[in-house]
Every structure is written in C-alpha cells, then in structure tokens.
Length: 51
Image (tube, rainbow, N blue to C red; front, side, top):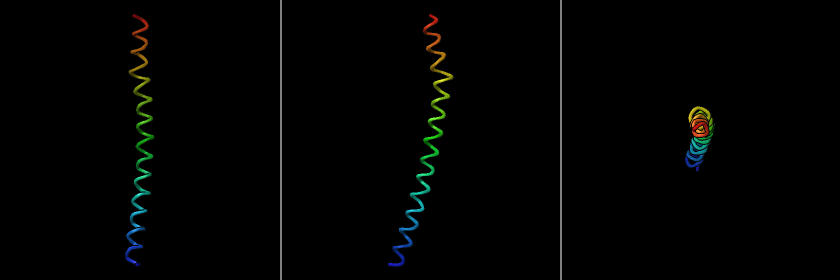
C-alpha cells in the first residue's frame, strides 16, 4: 500500500511538471506566432494592398 502511494505521488509530480512545461510551451508558441504575424504576414498584406 505504501509503495503504491509513493508511485502515485511520483506520478502526480510528473504530471504537474508536464503541465508547467506545457504552459510554457503554449506561452512561447503564442508569443512566437504573434511575432511571426507582425513580421511576415502584415508586411505581405501591406505589399498585396500596395500592388
């Protein structure tokens, strides 16, 4: 019983770590996509409107 409890605790710690990692990944990808849109898509739209 005690051993199972340790495994569960370890499991929960890993899940928590994974959630933090996942959160950071989401933040980074959101930030990156904003930069991508500002630097690439907006100038393309500007060029298309200019033409």
